[in-house]
Image (cartoon, rainbow over all chains, first blue to last red; front, side, top):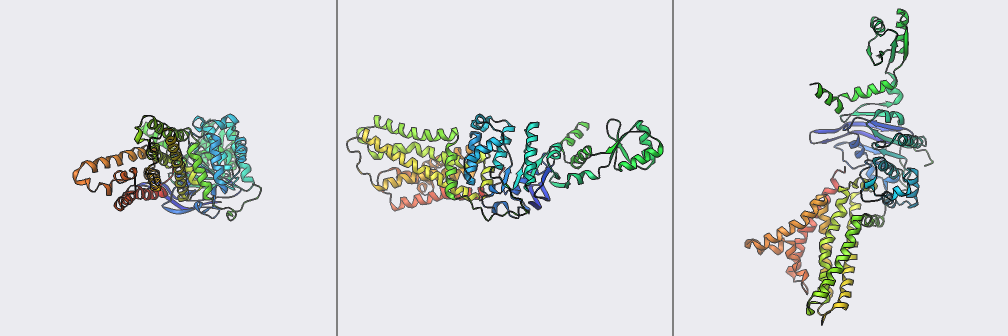
Length: 304
Length: 257
């Protein structure tokens, strides 16, 4: 279990992490989601003691990371797949970790096989690795001691679709066996695919957290009528606020049954009526992070 | 992983990695890259080459064991500190500190392991230099090659080599950047030596402030005087121990990114 309580960290006048509190539970994959520069990496560095917070505490299974003896045996960490000596071979990188942790070197071969790095790839120097290969090496490094807790910063970054699928089943099975998995991403669909729980962060602050289902719950309805304008008028008359949402459809906070009732009462034909699931989460993400996302700033700059 | 984990971690069954293991890892890190390997090979090769050239070209009366040791040691004295610097700075320039300090969050333990590893290599280099000098004396020795060599000469030679390594480590810790540390390691002491040996007002205080000046007697035959030992201690504190402590303070607090 990973617990952050009121963690803050500032660099001069810039607040990277602002009063962040959340818990990653055992048996669950927790996705740490936010745009670039939102404070994900800083929070994760604080969890493993590489960065000292100005305020607050971060504990793993009730301990401060630095107090855990031989911590890599208990907590698998991947913070930056590129933070490896470019001149070492992939196998050597794992061998150094195995030695430090006191694991047999046979474990290195097992891990190379597990993450799908071939014999020739293992002999190559990290300088010649693609980002995807570095991620696999980093994951091998984190999983080497089969720790009950995993902290992975952008682990899916650079992986191809097959790699992401592989990582999903890997992390799922880890959580199913009772492990605590925390992974960060700036891509909603990555987290949506892998995580059970979500913690959304923007500009250093937690903006939403909960299970995927909880975050989806209040997201309302997608409806498309045979005649879009007529439907819009009918909904407005019924007191249901709806906004256009692509393909001539409308999105509203109201429940599907209310929308259907209003349409039936007015005799309007519906072409589509469903809870606005995936799109809802996406909108939530965009909305929650809109003020913080760099993209928005750029768009505004273009308009101005 | 077969058990189900609760919210707390039971860490009672694991112990910290023993220091011997950390030292082994640090030693391995020095030779597991091409750069590290070549630095080692270069140190060995230059030791042999320098000694051989002196053996072939030196005057008959100069070709003593003592001088051979000096020649074997001179290139080492330049390269070993670089090794000490890189041992610390490559963790930052290659960003492996992130992994190193997550594997062993007690940074001071990693540093102790690095110091031990550096001193072990220094000792190995010392032994190599003495062996090469012995061999060279047998092969190229002049009329009376063994004359005047005492135990104190080995001690002085050792001090010279080890203080270089430690100073390299200290500069590495202080600057946490290979380029900065290497350049300043060579430039600063040289600049001080020039300054203190050319400005008349400073010349008298040079052996008390300038490490290079104080180390001078280490390269001459015979024991040092009490004053010279004291000067060595004072300048050693100034140029090795204080930078080391400042660097230690910095490394323990530095944010690792």
